[in-house]
Image 1 (cartoon, rainbow, N blue to C red):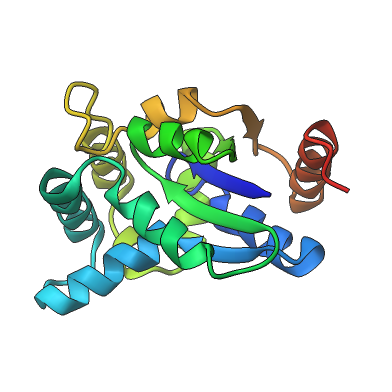
Image 2 (cartoon, one colour):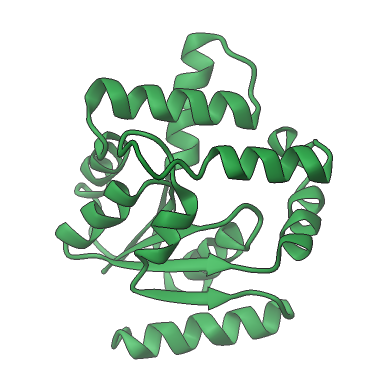
Length: 184
C-alpha cells in the first residue's frame, strides 16, 4: 500500500507518519527530507523560505511530479507498505493516485497548527504567527502547477482528517481511515 500524506502547516502529518511507521510497519519517504538534501547541497539556509524556493525550482526544472517520482523510485526497492509525506502540490497528489496510492490529508484550526509548529521546535517554524500565516499563504499558489499549493493538494485528498483534538483522537481517526481503505 502507498499512502501519500498532505496537509496544512503543523496539522499533524508527521505524527500520522510516526504512527504508521511504529504501529503499522510502513516505510517512510519524506518530500521535506528530499528537499533538505537539495538545500544542503546548494548551501542555502535551512528555513521554510528555502524549502519553498528549492521545491519550486525542482518542479520547474524537472516537472511538477519530480519530487514524488524520485521518492517513489526509492520506495520501489522496498517490499511492504510505504508512506510518502509532505505532498505540497496538486500534481504530486495526482501522481500518488496514478501510482495506485491513496492520499490522506491532515488539517486543523490555524491556532492549533501554529502551536504544533512551535512545539516541534524546528528552525523552519521559528517565526511569528503572522509570518507563519504569510508563509502558508505563499505556499498556496493556485495558478502554476510547478509551485506549491498546499490547500489545493489538501482538497485533492481521498480522505481528510481534521486534527483539532487529542493525539488519541488523531490515532483513532487514522485507524478509521485504514479500515475504510481495507488495510488490515
